[in-house]
Amino acid sequence: MKLEQIETPAALIDIARMQKNIARMQAQMNTLGVAFRPHVKTTKCIDVVRAQIAAGARGITVSTLKEAEAFFAAGVEDILYAVSIVPAKLPRALALRRQGCDLKLVVDNPTAASAIAAFGDQHGETFEVWIEVDTDGHRSGITPEQHTLLDVGRILHENGVKVGGVMTHAGSSYELNTPEALTALAEQERAGCVRAAQRLRDAGIACPAVSVGSTPTALAAAQLEGVTEVRAGVYVLFDLVMHNVGVCSLDDIALSVLATVIGHQAEKGWAILDAGWMAMSRDRGTSKQAHDFGYGQPCLLNGTLLPGYRVSGANQEHGILSSAAQSAQAGDIDDIAERFPIGMKLRILPNHACATGAQFPEYHAVSPDGTSVEWRRFRGW
Image (cartoon, rainbow, N blue to C red; front, top):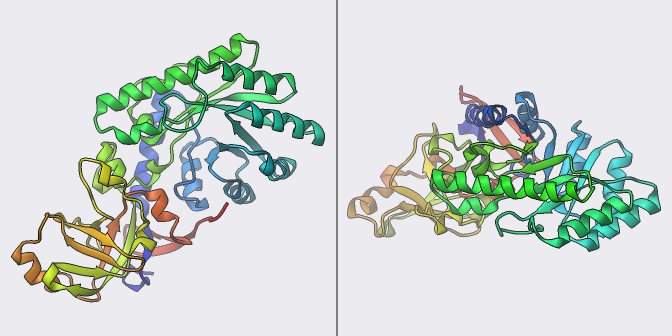
């Protein structure tokens, strides 16, 4: 199917850009001498994951048990569920392991650790559990020097639960925008996670895996001594937030939303699109960065950027395309309808690839010759 034939709005993946992004990250991991476990929450798409595994990835990271179930059914066995498990979800985790899935769970508190130990004992199952470490104060996890780290480790270890390793995510990297700051945070992330692993080992608790990662720190890391694997997700498609962070160019962004011009408000300098926040998502991550792209950066159908324009506003099913200037110039107002006629199709680069992809049940994967095929994606929890 040609792009002109696809009904809008639709999510497009540029296959050539995606493959380039995959190769870049895998080469970085190979150079640093660590395994790579991609986070598949960005695409939730088996076609993309197969390309990542073919390039050298070992196992995957998921953010929901629904993802774990879907990817295991598609043939992927080595899966890290990288969200702290709650007791109510343990039966689903047990079912996966009983089917042969090498599912690894994550905890960051004694309550969940005790629940896993009790549930495993009750059902005769030895779970593998990784402990989440907080290395930058961004979200969840136990800080490397916190006594709770050893409390959790001992609860698991002394009750027959395998402590498979420690993992961390330096999500605060999204707030940075210089190579120096990103490299410094990558070292902070590495050192903190390695320190947590060493504390557990010093306490007599085996901790074979040391897993770190975010897309910015993975690409900025200078060395990863003591780390066994890296996780990253959005790198496979990239987005405008990552562009502002400084880890990709606009030409590296492989995800776009195909939209059609459906009307104009000429006196305001607006062209109206059929892609609102239900297509682009409500994520406005670039509003906190040096360059605000509104709801997305428009491009021509062939991918050529349209500098000076952005999707400046969005309702549920309507996007507003306008000049990126504070106030539209007279020329922009006069020729908006001529420049963007009704029926014209555009590609919109998104702020956040994970959030935008989640709005669609499938991707249209576009080859260099302009033809596309459908790639299904998984949804739900």
